[in-house]
Amino acid sequence: MDVKEFLKTIPEFAQLPDADVDLVARLAKVGEVKAGSMVDVQGEPATKFYILVSGRLGVVLELDFGVAKKNYMVTSVGPGQMFAYSGLVGNPHYTAGSRAMANSTYLEFDVAKLNAAFNEDPRLGHVMMRMVAQTIASRLRAMQLQLAQQYAVSEAEQAPE
Image 1 (cartoon, rainbow, N blue to C red):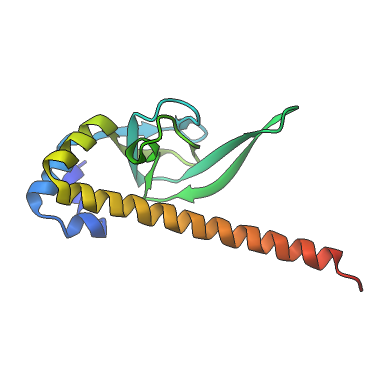
Image 2 (image 1 turned 60 degrees about the horizontal axis):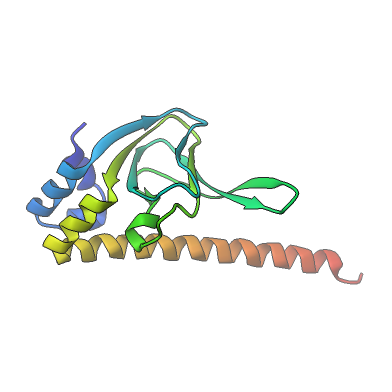
C-alpha cells in the first residue's frame, strides 16, 4: 500500500506540502484487524493514534452501572476518518474503544513521535489538530442529535392522548 497516496486522498492532507505528507507517511505503520476484534481499548494508555484505510469500525463506550457493565456503540468510523485520538489531545488513556465491524486496515501512529513532529513543524500540528477538532465536533453533533431524538420520542410516549 502506498501510504502517501492514501493520505493525499484525505482533503486536509491533500492541502499540505509533499514534505509534510512524506513525514506523516514515514511515521505510519499499516495494521489490520479482523471483524469483531478491538483496535484500542477504553482505559488503556493512549499511546497510539489511527486513521482508517478500509473497512468499518464502531466506537465503543463501556459504562459501569455498578451492578453490570454494558458496551454501547456510539458512532462508526469509515475510511479516511481518524480514531483513538485521546493521546493527541492530552488524555493519558483512551476514553472509548474501537471494534472492527468488518475486516479493516488502518494506519497507526505513535503519539509521542507525532507530537515531536508537530513541535518541529507547527503548521503540520495545526492541520492535524484541526482535523481532530473537526472529528470531535462532528461526533458531538451526532450525539446531540441522538439525545434530542431520544428525548422527543420519550416526550411523545408520555404525552396525554
